[in-house]
Length: 80
Image (cartoon, rainbow, N blue to C red):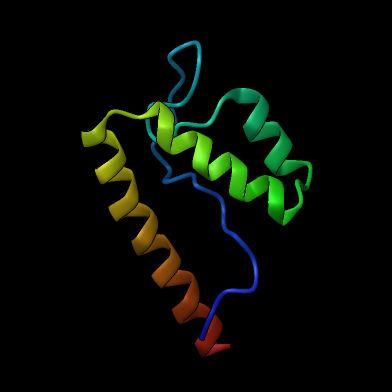
C-alpha cells in the first residue's frame, strides 16, 4: 500500500545549528511551513532542499531513519 501523503522529514532527533536542523535539514521556517499545511508540491521541494543541506553521512543516516518511519506509517495504514 502506498502512503497518500508525504510525511514529515523529522526523525525525532531535532536540533538547531542556527541555520537548519542537522538531523532533517529543515530550516525553522520550513518546519513552521510544514506544520501550517504546506501543499504536496511544496513538501516535495522542502525534502529536496533538506537533502542538499546535509553532509553525505548525515543524509545517509537521515534517509535510513526516514525510510523506517515511512515503512512504519505504511504498516499502520495496512493495519487500519
